[in-house]
Length: 247
Image 1 (cartoon, rainbow, N blue to C red):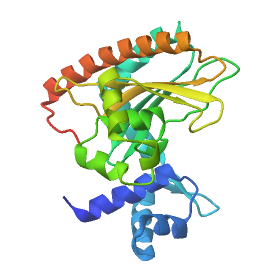
Image 2 (cartoon, rainbow, N blue to C red):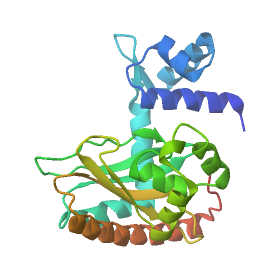
Image 3 (cartoon, rainbow, N blue to C red):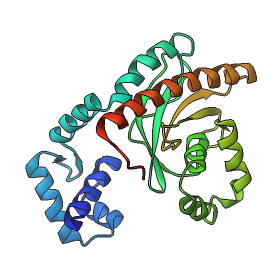
Image 4 (tube, one colour):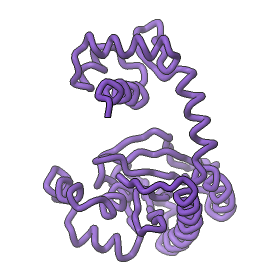
């Protein structure tokens, strides 16, 4: 790996995760020398991947938008998700998210917002530590053992244990009720590829006033059906690209 490229990508990710932050705050969060962060940001601004506003804050630039749109077109599972979620929304008009594991965190890469007056706000790009919420617990359950051990030994340990994670793998579903946001529940199911691995999940966020037991069961079944369809698309993509990686 080229370390300088990795550092630049880390800075770009920080800008994406914390739009509007200035040089000092980005340097603090990156734990990189301020002068080096400044040089990286200057290069990214000149290339159009980052924009610096009049207030001095940095945000993603037009080239990042172009790159994101191109990635969306090339990522078969997202294209398939658009169609599958459109079908799902006819029966369940709720927020639907696709989240992936990224190291010790998980990030939301897709969001479909429901049209009901009472709804949950959830935006693509949202990033949280593994073990948090329905999606975080599910993705932790399918993570490599060293990551599971590290998370269980950390601050989340009082809320998690190996038995809970084993139960998630057995039932292939994870639930939360008001854990992250009062009055909001969630259901998450895994997207398991042809090799039996899972680093992505499909979830729905629902106001608890609508999330009755029967509704949750029906929603889980529908999400599982979509997840299985997406898994087939993912398998076909892996065969086409010869992908053998899975972090």
